[in-house]
Image (cartoon, rainbow, N blue to C red):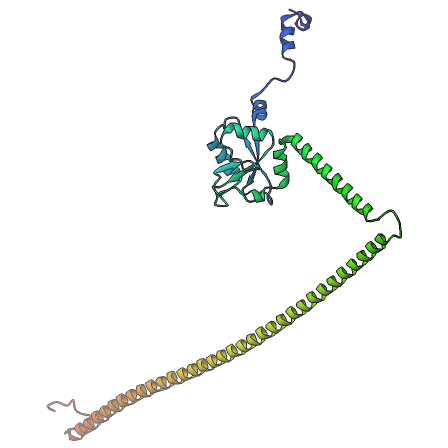
Length: 306
């Protein structure tokens, strides 16, 4: 079969190729389409915290697994808290997986409780109104429309009140003059109050500065006194140490001199003893020489017996 036959309209291959036109579903696209997104707020902090978006894949289908996912995604271990219950903005408790999926499809806010009682005072007004009007974009549109209608009604009522008082009809009417004078008086009183508060703040700051200066001066004087006392103690310790060193040197010198004197005395006594023995020996030798028959210095003569 040729290339033309392959791509002709009547061939079987062209029929199969025509069936494949378009995007075929994949596992990623199925997961992406079946994923559930929850906008979670912590109970008691919904009015001053951001929403935590928790994505639940299709394999998560029990409340226990969902609560574990929310607990981990919101990082509640760092807060020493544990996710235990899920509420809708009006305080209704979510008990089943189907209820949670329905709430996620309508973009309802999910309030995560940790076992404590639901706090309705911290739920923002816009979240509650969007939930009460059905949720989703339609609910937000209804809330916005109601808000615009209320603003229009309030503006009309204010305009009627102004007209009934005579404002805008006569430029120099009594109501206009009175309103202008009241505005001027209100501005004057407000300016006087602001000046008074400003002067009070200035006096309070001056008093604080004075107290701070006195505290700094006291601390400085105490530091100087402590430094002076420490310096005197150090000088006394240095003086005592120097005196001790000088006394130790004197004691060592006296001990050394005493040892030298003792050694000299021993040497002198030994020298005197040796010298006396030498003199005695010399005297004895002279006596022997004087008694010798052959004269002095002839002690080795024959027949001489000492």
